[in-house]
Length: 206
Ligand code: PRP
Ligand code: URA
Image (tube, rainbow, N blue to C red; front, side):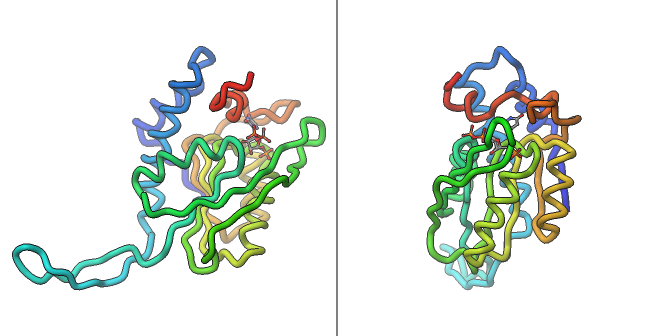
């Protein structure tokens, strides 16, 4: 399943991020806000279990989250989605995957991996703002699956059709959420119109 969450608030904030003149502070702030809005929608199907509690008035049969939620940002740019989601789900644990894309071959290279316990039973959200060729997302999902994760969603901001096709073919069981589906990849592997290099814009490295 591929879902584009093109709510007007998300689209407006993404437009601010796309603008060339938007600086690091506003870029990151809008990314935080979009991450929270996307998480609210993505978590609609998080399983609940029944609990009985006592309110100040009476006993109440109600529900609590049934599964642990684990966020797995792909370094570096995926880190930009963590705080916004954690502001809604403060109990979420965070694993990290370090991948960089070779500028020539566009192939992903792993340089770091650290996960909390319990991936097998958790609701796992893999985070990366950019889905270009799809190589990084596919490799990250391979890594969490290898460690037992079964319930996995991929959360991206901007996707290229090439990346969507590659990811859905490689991992048809993983739902993909985007804030926007863009037009194509250019000859350097950048999403067009996109927003440039997400990692550099979040961390001010260019
Ligand atoms: C960017 C982006 C994704 C990847 C997407 O990361 O954050 O991880 O490229 O491209 P793909 O779909 O073709 O794999 P990059 O490798 O530039 O690293 P960074 O986040 O450290 O800047
Ligand atoms: N990574 C980015 O940060 N931006 C792109 O457009 C493609 C890959």
